[in-house]
Length: 336
Image (cartoon, rainbow, N blue to C red; front, side, top):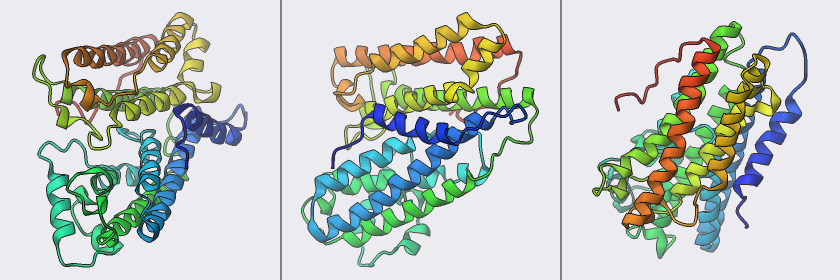
């Protein structure tokens, strides 16, 4: 199975969102963004279902590469929802079940090793009662990529893998269901604009945290703090984050870009669209963040990418808020 490119994934999301959009003057201003979010949630659910299916196939046929590729596609689809602090509460509260990160003490590794070494035959209900560290994408990554995983050499512990994949698919379905209704339809235009900018800012700051933790202090990086270091896909994940934020910003012509232009702030809108485009065009994906942090030159490359996100943050969190006269909501990652 050939993995979808970032561009293909973006096209899928925008196409699904675009097909659902109907132009009505009395439509709530959040509708365009809501359609993007709904499409993202459904896409994630579809990918999680495929991962569950591929895991079952792997357990029968033993094709590790096939299920690894689907894990990556599921992870990339999650990037569109990752780090958001705005939306349906029942969807947001599932975030830790989907992905336990940051994992500062390798809790996932220790918990997963204990899980596979136990005598218990695990099923989905059992996994749902366990710590979030063994429920989501990170625990499946450990099974598929870690050198200590028994799946690397045998399908003996496949019941653990299928149980976790089934639990992930179940939680993805709950998230998609939570997005079936627009959570912002009751907000007035100013409150919605503040919520929208907060949505983008929170997600952007979460992506930046995914870089600041492993970058740490100059000369003393902490590569094991990088997301998806086992699979070596951290920079691909971040590019998917940025792609998703760009899609949210544009929202098929009904997003923040449109609002800025309507209010005469064309130069600022152009600056943001250029920053998104140039960041994506120059984003390195051939090496993971873990690999980049092994050398001084790699560290400089990684830090240069972080600076691109800093510029996006300044434009969206500062400039847009000032131009539109709105107050940005509190970000749960502040002070973390």
